[in-house]
Structure formats: C-alpha cells, structure tokens
Image (cartoon, rainbow, N blue to C red):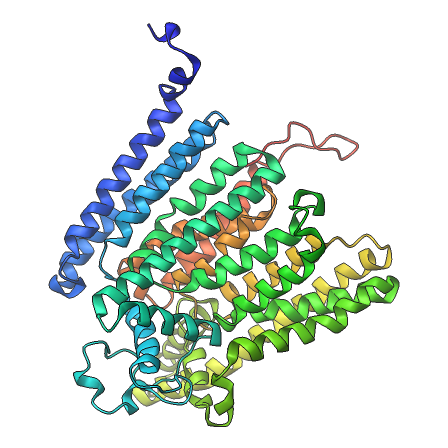
Length: 515
C-alpha cells in the first residue's frame, strides 16, 4: 500500500519524519508540564519539589534535543521537511511563552527600567529604583536590583521603555510583551540563520540550523520562558556576521553596496543592547589597519568605523548621555565584576579551598574574615591574569592576520570570524561571570558561520550542558563551570579529533565528513 502512495505522501511516512514528530510531541508535553508546574510562580513550590521536577525534565529535554538533532540531519531536503521543523519551532516557542518565569527575576528588572522612564520620567543610568518615591507600593515595580543603575546599553533602555508603553501599566501584559518580543527575535534570528545557511550549503543545512536554534531548550526556557534579553544582542550580531561571511554575490542586489555599512550598524546596535560585543570593534579595526597598509581602499574603513560607532552611539544614546556626568559608575562596575559560573570563579573559589587546607595543615587560623580578605585579593589578581592571557591571545590572532593582509588575501569572512571568536572567548572564558543565558548572545551568530566552523560545534556542546544550570548544579561555585563549560569543550575537542577525516600522504582529506 505504501508503494502506491504519491511521493509527497511517502515523505510524511519516512522514519526520520515520524521520529522528529515524536520528539516534538514529547518536548511539547514536557513544556506543558512547565506551564502547569509554574502556573502560580516558582515560589509556590519548595526547593526540593522544584529539584525533583527539574532534574528528570531537564535531562529528558537534553536527550530529546540531541535525538532530534541527529534525526533532522536525516530528513529529505524538501520544503515539507522545512515546514515540519518550522511548525515544531512555532509550537514549542508558544508553549514556552506561556511558562511563568521560574528561574530568574531579571525580566522584572527590565520592566523596572522601562517603567521608571514611563511612569516616573527618570533616567535609569542616574536614578535607581530605590530612589523613586513610594516604589514599594507601585504594582509595576519589583524588588530586583533596586539599588543598582541600569546595567544594559542605551538601546535596550529604549526597548524597555517601549515595551512598558505597550503594557499600559499592566504588569502581566508588559511581561507578555517582553516575552513576545524575545520570541519574535528568536524566530527572526532563526530565519536569518537558516537563509544564510541555504546560501552556504543548501536546504539540508537550513533544516539543521532552524532546528538548532528554534528547538533549543536553553533558548526557549531562558530567553522565552524566563525572558532574558540576550537575544537582542545575539540577533543583531547574527545579522552583522551573516552579511559579512556570505559572498557578496549571495546577497540581494540592493544590499551589496551597503554590505559593510549594514554590518557595522548592526554590530554597534548590538553593543548598545548589551555592551559585551563592543570588544569586536577594536579587533576588526586592527584588521582593517593591517589591510590599509597594503590596499588603499581599506583606509576608508579605518576612518569610518570609529565615526559610525560614535554617531550611532550618540543617536541611540539620546537623551541618556545628556546626564553622563551623573552616571552611577560605581554601581555599574560592581555589578560587572561579580564572579559566578566562570573560569575566574573556578580559580577563585578553588584557590580559597586550597588556602583553607594549607592553613589547617600548618595550624594557622582561618575564619570568615580570612575568607573575605582572600577572595578580595585573589579576585583582582585572577582577573588581571586572565586579561593578560586574553591580551596575549588577541595579539597572536592579530599576528596571524598580518601575512594574509600582506598577501592581499584577507577575506572579510576570515576577519569577522576571528573577531567573533575573540568575543566568544572573552564572554565564555575571560569574563568574571558567566551565566547559561549569555549563550543567547553568541548562538544565533555562530549558526550563520559555515557549517564546519569549530565555534558551531563547541558552542552547541556547551549550550546543551548549560541546561543543567536550571538545577542545583547551577549554584555550585566550582562544579558548575567545570561540568557545564570546561568539560563540554574538552569532550567536543576529543570527539572532533576522533571523527576527523583521515589524510593521505599528500595531506589531502579523504572521506570528508561533517561531525
């Protein structure tokens, strides 16, 4: 009977298609469980109840996601397959939009920053929530970072204000608008990455890319359910990187002459959402300086890049920067230097434990004040040490670009890819604090890179492991970074080495695969 069906009907009955539909249904059932569990908020249940719920559900999502990732690569490269993947993305996204924030209250901090502008007319960089008269009785405001200034860029301060205007003073409606904007961003970033991959490798790569982003439990639970804002940076960075890594001929004719300007504007706009991506700009500028030494037409980039950065910053930063002299720099710096979930955190708290053991070994006193003193001293030294290593790595990367610039063979895709890699290292390994949702800044951009780019695989492995951050493991000061960041990178490297294609005597790859 199966052989008598038309080809289009046969496709729907292929084992990979049925398997992916089963994965979608099982994931949907798990997310429905999240909707029910947290319908009355996270604190409606005890910590033990939450852990007993989270461990089996998170582990199940990890297994299902990896199962689906393997399955989507086996789908036939047809429009029907694409619609199945897009349909699953839509269903899972809407379900996660219905989940109440259960892991973080950051989304209410965004509402705080927006509402203090809409309801009180204050500058979030100079006035804290705690300074607003009667803020405790305002139903729109939450006791979240009430004594810190806005830690986000000027662009996101505008976004927070607009979303609060849409909410019209209703906190639940405003929360819905914030999460809806993040869901739309995820879908747009996924669509853009899928289109870029279609230009690179065809529809087969599009299917994998759309699945990777649109079905990813980390993005759905952190950025949609809990409403983290990192996708604002990630989506804009994906636009910049995608425009510059594609061949110019693959872009629409209207966009080709504007390619560099669009990429720069998107990059600067991403840094005005969250400042982290600003580290990409100096790396690019150094590359353009190297190119300008040997090719005159690159000299305009050396001049225009700083001008574009400053002009866009001034335009988007209006009117906040008018009170620049009153910015609460101390509050911003204190928030940025918190150590959590990072290599810095592992070294800091690991060294503290070693110091305690040595003090006990040599019969020296060690009290709470000794712990405080050690953490304050060691934190600074470790931070400077990591920055020194990072600086050395950046110098090495720049030196690798010089020969290509000299030979006039340095491609835009190579330069922008290198700058993005520097950003990933700074964010994931050098930054004193690293939270799982930070991956929303880099995953969309990584998915516009060519299919075999190492950052795609490395970040995917790390992002799956970071799902364990929803459990009590996310609060461990040493084990979290080791098990959720360092270990996945090591395993990914080992896996790629084991599955790298063999080479013949002429050092030419044979039997190439895409691990």
